[in-house]
Image: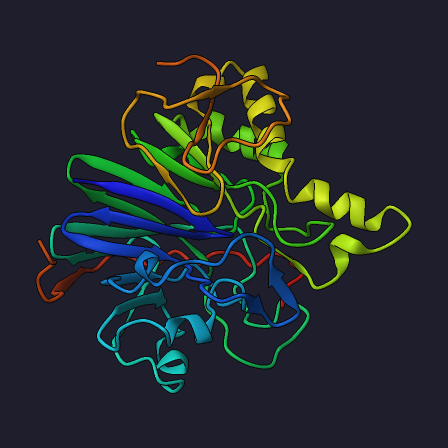
Length: 313
C-alpha cells in the first residue's frame, strides 16, 4: 500500500511501486554547522531504502554521511554529470538522469523535471568542485503521481506536469533568510496554484538550524525559532487566500502523510498550537520485501536547469 512520511528538511520516505524511496536523505543529527532541531530519526525510517533521489549537489541535499548509512546496494539517482563524483566517494550504485528522462525501477517510474536552483556543490560563487543541473522528480506508481520539486523557485512550465496527487513543495530553508532559487511560503502558494495537486505537503522547513542560533540574543534567536515553526502555516494562509486551503497538509518532521482524502485532525489557519505527535494537520475543509532493484532508462532530450544565486553549505 502506498505510504509517505516526512522525515524532515527535504527528506521524504515514500513506499511506492514496490520500492522504498528517500528524497535527499539527511539522516544525521548534524550537517556541517547545522544541527537537527527535532527528534532524531529511527533506523527503521531509512534502513530499508531501495532508491534514493538526489535533487542537487548542495550539502543539505546530497549528504554523503547519510548516504553511507544506507545499504551498499541502494540505487542512488543523481543529476547527470554528478555520477562519477559520487562514485569516487564510495557510493556504489549510482545512476544519472537529466530533465525529461525517465528511470523505471520495479513498478516505479521516475522522471526528472526542471528546477530553478543553483546546481554547484559549493554554490554559484565558487567554481571549485562538481556541478550538475538541479532537478525535481515526478514519481508514478500504484495509480499515483507525486511531484517532489527539490529546491526551486517559480519557473515557466511549472504548471505543465499534468494531474498530480501530491506535491512536495519547499516553503523555507535552514537559515534566517532565503536566497534566489527558493520558494518562500507566499511563492510556494503561487506554485500550488500553478500545479493544482490533490494535496500539497510543505517540506524544507522546521528541521535544521545553525548551531546556537535559536538561542542568540537581540531577537535573532526568537526570529529563528519562529522560522522553524511558521513557514508552513504562512503557506497554508497564502493558499487559503487563493481558495486552495483544503489542499495543504502540514506534517511535522517524522510524521506520516495519509495518501487519502480523509483527515485525521484539522487545525484552523493561524492556530499556533502544534499538532499531536501522531497527527498531521489539514488546513481547511475536511474532505513483501521488495525484489532486487532493476531499472531501465528511457532517453529524452535533456533540458538544462538555469543556475540561480543561492546561499549553500
